[in-house]
Amino acid sequence: MSDPAPASRALLGRRTLLTVSEFDSVQGAAASRNESTLTVLVAGASNLTIAAAKAVGSVVSGSAALQAEAAHSVADTVTEVFLYIANRRGGRAPDAQHPFGHGRETYLWAFLGAVATFVAGASFSLWRGVDILAHGESRETGGMLLAYGILIFAFVVEGVSFSRGLSQARSSAARFDLPRRTYLQRTSDTTLKAVIFEDRAALAGLAIAATGLALWQATGRSEWDGLASLAIGILLAIAAISLARANLSLLVGQRVSPQLQNALQSEIEALPGVDAVRIFIVVVLGPGEVLVAAKVSFADDSSAIEIERVADEAETRLRTRFPGVRYVFLDPTA
Image (tube, rainbow, N blue to C red; front, side):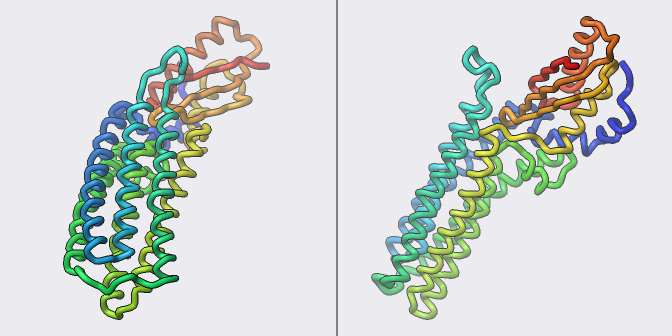
């Protein structure tokens, strides 16, 4: 077995080789799914508890912002249910009807979760904010002490869930020697990304709701409460649209990063008997899994046995050095 060319060796430096962190593959896709499932369950339990508390607070205070936040938590709870289903169904093994597995089903359910956030959370919050701005609040401020207490309670619980998500992202990023932000941008573990995005939006929404309540109480103008509800709706819409776009891209077969694609292609080009790689495609199959397909031009004097040996070596090398590679298909071409 010949050594990779110098350019290939440069690409296979530690940080480049570990760009496979896009697929959480060092621990394996199954381990990543199990960890993400726990993160989703923690987030779901937190959101359900918070939704009940916010609903009580909204009834007592009559605040549109708290009503928007209650809808926000209900939407997040529904989303966590979708994310749990995504992890369970997407992690099923390949079968006769689905030879490449069910990985992309993860992105379908996560996409539906993003839609649920938009419909159930953002739409209600926007409508409630517009309604208050147009017609005013139906009652004076009241029960504010309880409302503030609920917001503080919700902030603490959301903070615990957010910390859980960040802890998973930090530990995963550390395994690949990558900054946490870079890891979250590259990872195909959409459930982890969704939980962190939702919790971040939830914490921001709580701060907005508290500000709206304080200004309403201080000025006696209910418009501040309506503006807070409107801002929460916009925040939810932005988060939902961002997550929906990311999942839709992965669902239809997103390519990997140019750095990872170049590293994988260099591995094949460095194999003995390979003259050139004419066409090279790497697509995401699901969290922790990619497929590599290439049209390869071999040396003119290569025999069928030698080409077969090189193809086997290509699969072994790629799957060993890049554990996220699930399938390798090479097509000899002139």
